Length: 477
Ligand code: ADP
Image (cartoon, rainbow, N blue to C red; front, side, top):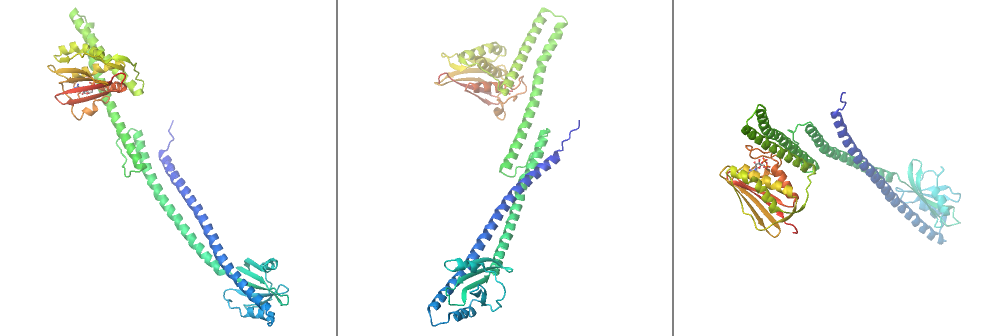
């Protein structure tokens, strides 16, 4: 069946959705905040301007009230004509209109001099009649503009006039408020634009590298480990790129190790198998007792080698999967070391290598797995003999301190090059490819010693020899 996935389309969609989501979120939050700010600016500006205008007109009304009450007390003056006089000679005509209202509630005189015949809408007059201070204020529309009207009652029953009314148009104030609002809206639009531009820049700075990372990750997934991402920043994107590059290095390295391992194991398996096959075929075709003895010896020896290799591989796979189990009991570690040495005494003699060991007087109680520890000693001594030429020597020393036992195996063999030394404890690493071995012995040994709470240290000089030092903690310490 054909695969329907269109990766490019998916990638594009993902990128767009992050950008769109980011832009929608930031822009809508910014827009809501700016709308609230604009409403606040409008509300407070209007309140301030209208409030100032109102207190100005109200103070005029109070001032006229004071003048009128003084005139009322002065019996020598004609009150009505004084009121007319006040209206006609009103000196703030530019800012407001002053009207006098007669007993019937109609506008009788106006400082503007225009006809007073028309019908006036005067809710402020109605309010003033009901107010105990005789003052009424109206803020609202009359005709086309907003107006502010303040009426003050004339407390004189003998007069023709019942009230004075001050009216001012709020057109100028409204214009001013409109100007302020226009500037604020313009500023808001500018802020939104800046937010959008910064957002686009920011989203681009995330999405573009992310797309690159995605592309490289896809190549990695397909097994192409050649490409690396350019790390241009130290932020999260930079760290992600770095981590991905490191991962690619690691995978490439493991691939290399795996391939080396497969070829090394195949090689290691081939040599004993060839020997076994060769001798089996020889024996099949008839044999004398001497040939039989020789052939069987080779077959048994090679089979043992194969068995050991498979054991090493199994141990290694158990370590990898976390199923490397050990049975801890109290053991004498010196006894295990001597057991391992016993196995190699003959071999050393045969290969003309001096295997020396000064049996210590003490015993060292260690909490450990005896078979695993013996396996470690076997591995280390085996390596020492394997990499030492005939005529050389291997020295095993055991020392005890208050808290630990130190066992060192020193040889006068081939040694390890300084650049290889840090890698010899790694799995499948072989510094010396001329000798048989899978390169896992030291990795397994190191793991076992670590699980015992100890350390395995290797010191070596190329051409001079190697010393492997194992330190294990003693029991009850
Ligand atoms: P191998 O099975 O190849 O010996 P090990 O894990 O035991 O694997 O050792 C890893 C590598 O360390 C060996 O291939 C060898 O190059 C080096 N090495 C270990 N012990 C010695 C030694 N005593 N002298 C020289 N080289 C050693």
